[in-house]
Amino acid sequence: MFECIIVLWLGFLLDVFLGDPEYRFHPIRLMGHGISLGEKWLRKLGMASRSGGTILALGLMGITLMVFLLLSRILNGIYGPLAFLFEVYVCFSCLALRDLTVHLDPVVDALESGDLEGARICVSKVVGRDVTVLDEKGVCRAAVETLAENFVDGFVSPLFWYLAGGLLGWLLGADPVLFALGAMLVFKVVSTMDSMVGYRNEKYKALGWAGAKLDDVMNFVPARLSFLFLFPGAMLTGRRGFWGMKIGFRDRLKHDSPNSAHGESFMAGALGIRLAGPTTYGDVRKEKPWLGEGLPDAAPSDIVKTMWLLSAAAWVAMGFATLPLLWLF
Image (cartoon, rainbow, N blue to C red; front, side):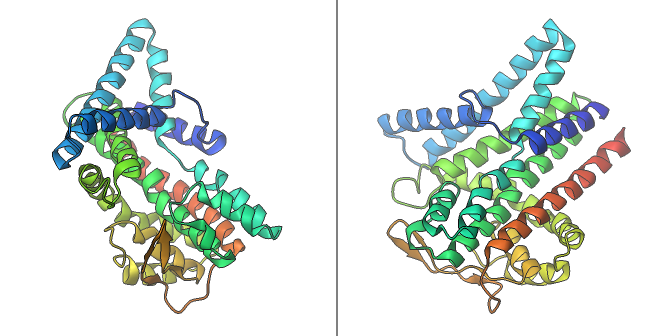
């Protein structure tokens, strides 16, 4: 289990200091290409259905795990440390904490310089809503919401499944690191598939059904555990942790998704702002309920506060994840 701890911390530190560099053969980008290719084949075969989406999800999981295990075995046969470095690389590629701030720093800069159109363009890169109708408050809400939601999907969930996989490997007497990274990769396949085809529109409501449901299942526990990290993160950064818990437990189930409002509702309480509300996606206006109803709107400074709070929460989460691994070691 000691190797599990080392791989996890090295992957985390690389993500903190390097972020998630864009390059052609990034594992998540390759997953995306696989999903796009699989979708084209399924549509040509007339299988753009729930069963086709299930085949796509299971097939990509199987291929991802097979490639990962094959590469790990080949590298281990060549030179053991190469396999270790590969494991660290995979862990690093599956965590996305630094990117939460990298993509939204330009939004803050644009808003502080009075460039609303520039802020809209920047925030459009990380949200799916129609940004052309957003005023400054709307841009701020969108930024805080995507930070809070992606903290679970991009960090807490991969961390949770790494830990779960490692513990399963240890219980089975197998290599905990391979099981940990395998579980992490399965989650990233599901998450990537949900972000690409998990929509409820006419084109994807059948094909994307499996990915969306699997994403709900795999994020269910991490979303609820996130309060354990967000509360101390709020206290460490001078935010209102108890209000975050109060609003979080009150509003966490207001969205259609069983998981997405957890981080957002906590953030609304901790920052003393309201989030969500009516949102436009394309030509469709969705009447989302307010999270933190009755509180004031978000400001550019709230985006920065959210970044600091989530960074602190991430370090707390790493401490929580390390404890069971140290106990088993």
